[in-house]
Image 1 (cartoon, one colour):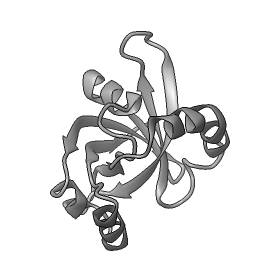
Image 2 (tube, rainbow, N blue to C red):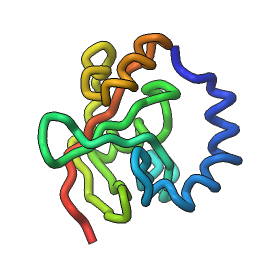
Image 3 (tube, rainbow, N blue to C red):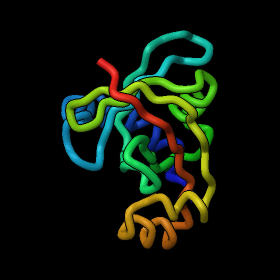
Length: 132
């Protein structure tokens, strides 16, 4: 069960501009820089972000609004983008959608329980290399 698309629209206009001020510097958050598939416009989307548990490089992002979210589709179509996490910018590649329940296993333990309760757990994984 994904969050309603109306909430996604509200967040895009109201919440995201506020979160972009700090999301790239604090724990559990990041800013994904991606390019629009049709417009070619650059976007910066704040997201929940976790280090991949299967290695030192890469990230896992919870897909709260579904696999049809623009940032997910844009990253997959482009084969990557950039992520600002804790003040460091990373070039990311190999975006892969991992559906629940396998995706849920890549999340931190407290979030696994929450995602199980709300029947969520699709994630996007990326490989990362330090950028500029």
